[in-house]
Length: 116
Image (cartoon, rainbow, N blue to C red; front, side, top):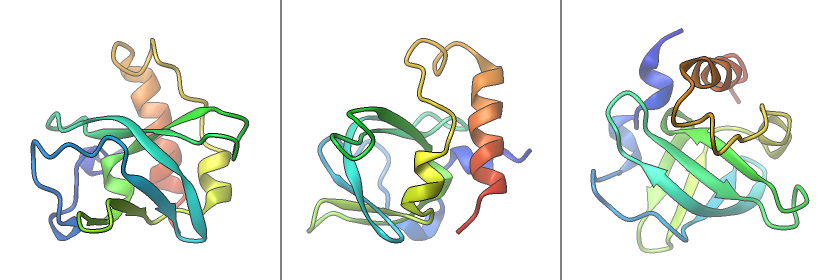
């Protein structure tokens, strides 16, 4: 698996250090929630999205490589996955996502295999 799924593409408009907390997250077929937290760590950049009532109040981990565009004026982030793909992703584990490389491989593998 390539680590590119864990890095922002140069065409997204992302600026390292920008605070994306609270930004709306839009899948290819509609809104999925808001950014709860994020990381710009090289090789491990991600968004944690609070889905609210959409998937019963769960959080999802989106690798930065799924981001297609960031609109700072609208405070929105567009990802190149469908709502269904995101809903079916491995469940977010707040403990494993920072300590378990196998978890990152599982999530990265899922999103790498499920392109829109």
